[in-house]
Length: 246
Image 1: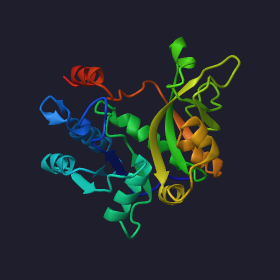
Image 2 (image 1 turned 90 degrees about the vertical axis):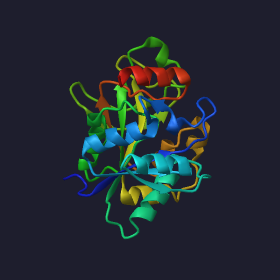
Image 3 (image 1 turned 45 degrees about the horizontal axis):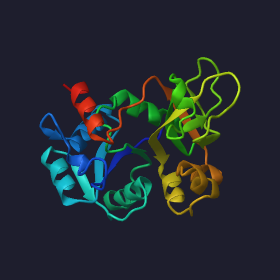
Image 4 (image 1 turned 180 degrees about the vertical axis):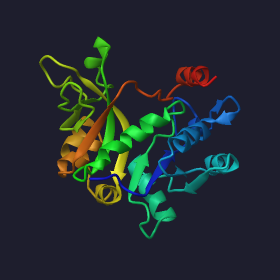
């Protein structure tokens, strides 16, 4: 077993945000947020980094910083569809064999966390990989906005197979609950398979896109990390990111 040899990091970014207008261009110490995310991805040293954007302003900001960006259809229903279009644009001949999908609103993400989401693909049976973190705040266990991953991790184990994802409190009984973190690493064949699938029954019920893959029999493994990256969704989050990046 070995990791894919030629991965690419693709960061989907779009301007449509009701809580934080023009979010990718939000200023953090003189640079747009999307540039900070691009830098963190570069520092992971996994492979080439590309921003998949739908607006010219984001494209120009990334290119000005020395990064690579590609324009995509603004009407994509999900980030997975956006990164797939970007992949076809930059690599129609199939050079890249894996894709790491990092959300464009994670300016403080640690490069090591990006490397950790790639690690489960060392197992040839894994189609896509993601991250989990143990829930330590009691109120999060029953909060439907905190997505739980059901992963049977034995003590000391840091990678396990994700059996389900839910907004409910699961599993029951004694033991840790895991907060799902929405970063993904896809094998190329898995991404191409995934974007062709119709929405799943449970996906629509739980409003969780990753259930589409499980319903189709794809294998998702999750790596356990110690902290949850700060997602910037509102002005308060932006201030936190600025403080962290001082």
